[in-house]
Length: 286
Image (cartoon, rainbow, N blue to C red; front, top):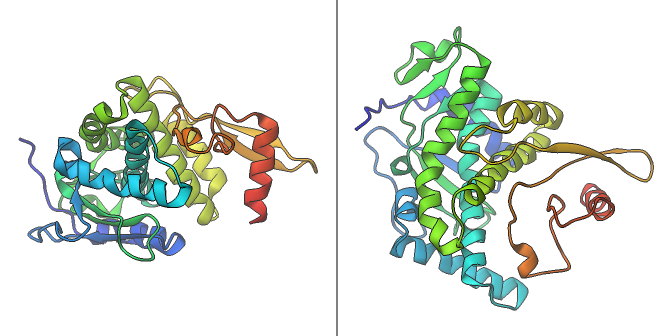
């Protein structure tokens, strides 16, 4: 069993505060070394999702009800599971990518160290309770002398830590969701790739650092970085007035088209570039 050293909350606090200030729909609480993770009410442990049993069943009931309420139809069970994975993995990846992007610190978060509640009123992405189990940082970082620190040689080594930390957390979660989604292997890791890229891309836009995030994500996921499938895959379209419109091609499909065939996502491979431009302009206008 790996030895986990408790990480002082101050190591990640500035990154999580900037994240939740820019995106108030998400709340993050760092737990103390001996503080139990919440398990009552709407809370579920990431380890319970990874087990794929009754905890996951209860978690997916929320997605099933949401589709019926918002769209007046029932989604296939595999589509419901795909929605559920996205709604967990998107904020979970931010726990790792945002401290890397803002502070050059990469926390380790095994599934036993994260709990999630998406039922809290007013929080579109829910709330997370986390207990980091160590972190990686660069030489010269003042946090390098703190408990739980592991110093790595440089930027590429730190990018490897990001990929490893996300994989450590998501691999058991993907194993729990996979059978219900009727996906495995490359298809699941394609979804993981998309959650990493699209989550940080979105938050960086809110922080006013979208272009830097795109460069950083291209270096983080250039392709052929197993177990991930695909790359950051950014490209640029041109609007009717010559404006630059960043987009990307997803490595996976979120399956929303099965609920609303006429309303695909702007980054969906099914969406042609002309429709992407229309969607991107509409989003910018709103």
